[in-house]
Length: 234
Image (cartoon, rainbow, N blue to C red; front, side, top):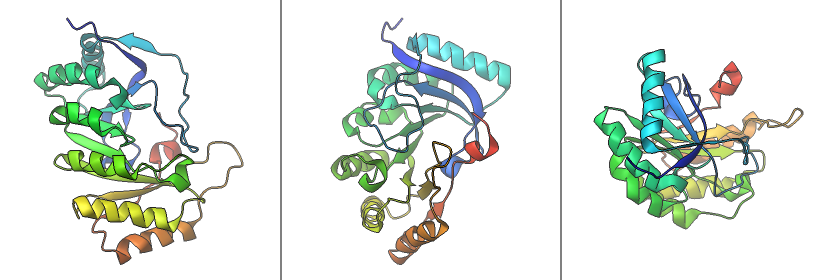
């Protein structure tokens, strides 16, 4: 039995509310901790967490599946799951034996950690953190290396946008994706307002971002908001 542990804040069954797998029934495993502090993030950075070993987590996942019926996949989310790459290596090897489909939701900034587990991942939902959206430094170098590793698995990228997002950042992100593989789906995701009274991104800005993608031959670009928040589900 592995003694390695991870801090997990929540495990639950719900509907995927983002990206190209919108509406899929998943088991969500939310890892604590993130290496970023994006301005639009709505996840608590210091929420209560419980320690799990890989065996304990797999038992919990199997119990939820038994209680709630079949699921499309298990969403490893956070926080940033790849901060627990050594834990994931052990957990995913065991989960694969149980025919569990793994769906990694990641900020796309930790390519070395991805390389440790990519053989065990089925689907990669990768964020491209553009600096004018996040308020952080840019991660173009890390994103490029990350996407090279991820791209031989089923992968899509997500760009969260706000009223502060610059056209140049969108163009740079789209150009980077096309450099790796032209048909990787690109999701433009409007940031959901965090506080009451926060301004939502304008439709004009969203249309401008779409035009940039289409002008530069992005084959598979679309706008998809956070539907779980609109539906009021977890």
